[in-house]
Length: 141
Image (cartoon, rainbow, N blue to C red; front, top):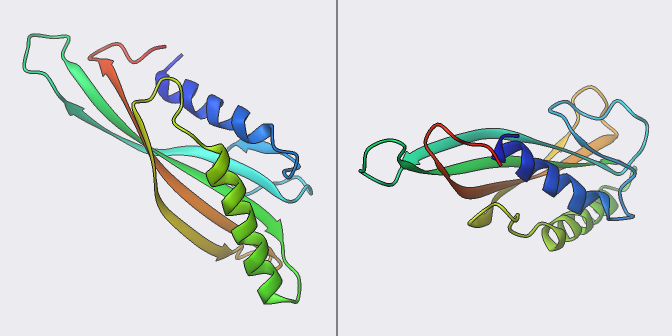
């Protein structure tokens, strides 16, 4: 299994253990289930830097960008929606710690949106950079 996948699965497990969420899925699209609040997460991108000058296989540092989306149903009370999104962010930030196979984990951005196709659905996205090292040609766990 690619280390990237193992890290994503570990984050999913950490979030699944929270009773506040009706479900936690690894997927890029919004939830198709009618269970809110819920989380979708996925690997958004990954950069690779060679950190050794020796002959192959060289050591690589990879920085994985993970998007964690917390979805919730809105109410006519915008202040409540804002408070609910902040509460979900606190929960996510308190649960996501550096994964076992990673060397570093850093929250780099938070974004707030209303789902375009359903204005009563809101999403807060927390973006993490997770660094790990792997030998060149061998990114498996």
